[in-house]
Length: 139
Image (cartoon, rainbow, N blue to C red):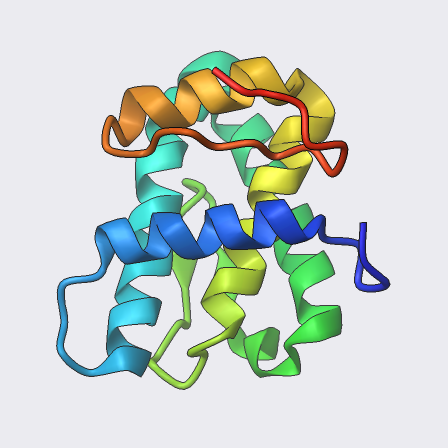
């Protein structure tokens, strides 16, 4: 892990997820939209697994951690249903930080193999991902 607490490979993975979801031409709007889309796509299966309150808690913790690195996220809230509110396009890099923390927490709680399986189920184009800092092979 780096000094900010995010494994660089997880940060790269978060950026790849944002890239897969980016559709807008404007980079800041694309990253904001992509962060919302990644969060929403993770919300469905994780709410099934851990319940809405469980996903909401996970996302709130990720947001709390992300705010330390990206204070521009101070206005962002996690709504009761686990969706994000308050991303307005100014958080270009902050979206990647938020998603990196969310994926990092997932890895901590359910492990790398299950996290990768979940991500690959949602994003089949995501392949050859290794989240560990040790460089071991992934699925």
